[in-house]
Amino acid sequence: QVTRPSLAFARRGGTMGVCLRVQKRLAASVLKCGKRKIWLDPNESNEISMANSRQNVRKLVKDGYIIKKPQKMHSRARCLLHREAVRKGRHTGTGKRRGTREARMPTKVLWMRRQRVLRRLLKKYREQKKIDKHLYHDLYMKSRGNVFKNKRVLMEHIHVAKKEKAREKSLQEQAEARREKNKAARERREAKKAGLDATIEAVEQTEKKGKK
Image (cartoon, rainbow, N blue to C red; front, side, top):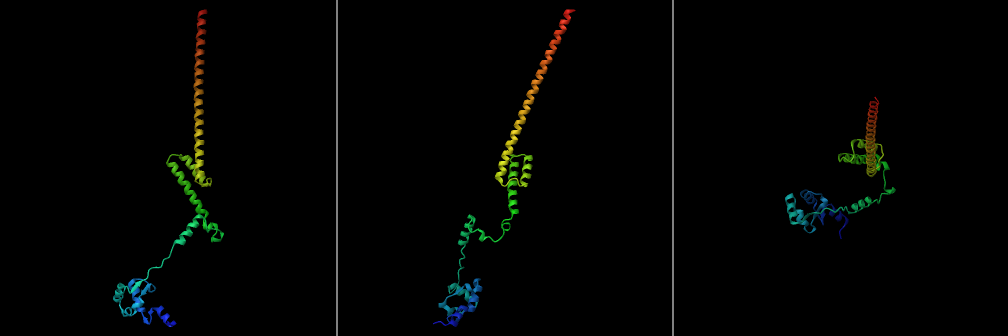
């Protein structure tokens, strides 16, 4: 039966009555690890105790009497499962929150993200000639004034604005065409009237000559 002092001695680096603290220290230095990672073969404790240099320790390592214990596994599986659940919205109730709403997600950060999304879209549309520089500036200032809450609303507004602009242009062209048509009709009437007046005057002059 092993007494308590013997167990304590074994924990300190001894093996059943043989002190191997020096060998454990040398092995840790040779294998570049901590002393807790060194395994000494308990069946070869006498031979290990004879090793008093690093060269002897290297030989024992080569023979397999001294081994560097493998690193213990620190599994990330549970952590990854938890993260996946949090992405789905689990484990995020009031009891799991530490900071205030502003501290957890500042409104300034949300504002910057939204502005960058909207401005990126406006820049892309301007480069693709989908909107002109005047509409771009108008929408830029409106997005800065918190008119559009997301990209979808801005895109809908652009479609409506373009449709309205096309309608105004069409009406303007129709009005211009109507003006041109009326102008041409007026000129024809005036020309006709002028021709009629000239004919009447010529007839009158002819009649006067006939009377003389």
